[in-house]
Length: 101
Image (tube, rainbow, N blue to C red; front, side):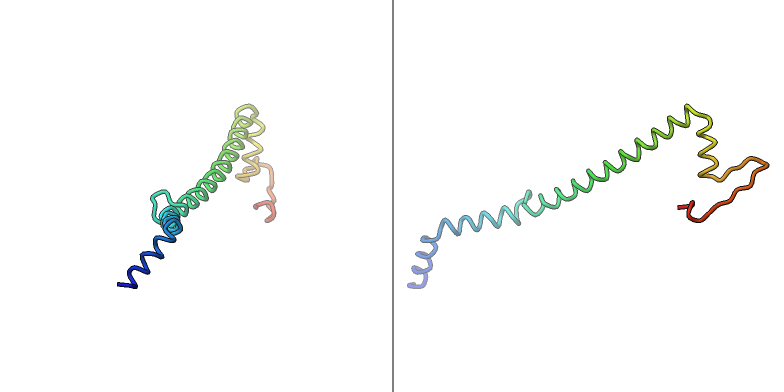
């Protein structure tokens, strides 16, 4: 019985510290919106934003190239020659390996 009374007195003496520790454990680990989950979501959000920026840049470049092709017929010939290695009937094409990259 003395041990129980002694234990209860220690709990009463440190009740605010124990309450704060329990609250901290709940907030950090157990809650639906825990700190760990929030950090993971923050990291995932940053990755998705960088991916959005990458695709936005790619879209702008593609749109610019499409507009160039729509306006200039010489640009179509240039793309056909550079990308698809097309040629006129009386021409020879030389392809270097460093140009393929």
